Amino acid sequence: MPDNLMQKLRTHFTPLYSPLGLQGILLALVVLVLDQASKLWILFGLRLEEIQHVNILPFFSFTMVHNKGISFGLLTLEGPGRWLLVLFQFGMAAVIVDFLRNQKNPLAALSLGLIMGGALGNGIDRARLGYVVDFLDFSGTHIFPWVFNVADSAICIGVALLVWYFIRADMTTKDKDAGQA
Image 1 (tube, rainbow, N blue to C red):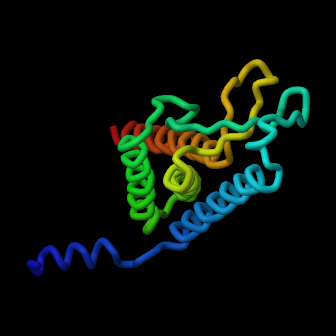
Image 2 (cartoon, rainbow, N blue to C red; image 1 turned 180 degrees about the horizontal axis):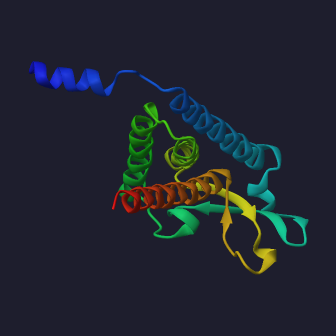
């Protein structure tokens, strides 16, 4: 490898992780553990596959759904499409690790950690089972008809926080530009 490329790689990967980057990765691991533990309990503790539906509150229940698509069952994928989605999810997690490594903004680290943990949780399901285990059902509210899981929640919250991060960054940039004019 040319010396210039090696120097660029050394610069990019030094320091290896910032404190916020490590916190984001730790959050991703917490989300992943919570997601997988809740799914294991639903499948093997509650045995929701056998009973399919358990009412908890008038507006909330556990309902077994095998989600073969992406978020909220959109774009059902089987066969090679399933594996492309698995590769995409794990690939995005790797990209997010790189963004997290030197993160200096707490909101960005939080949002990226949530997204990465959720992507890994659903990716593991899809690789292991061929579908994502969804079970949180708030359709009794008559507002939100989809069934989802902990990973989906983390991804949605993470994306919302990331959008908020970019909006704030854009507003800060505009304020600085206005002050310089």
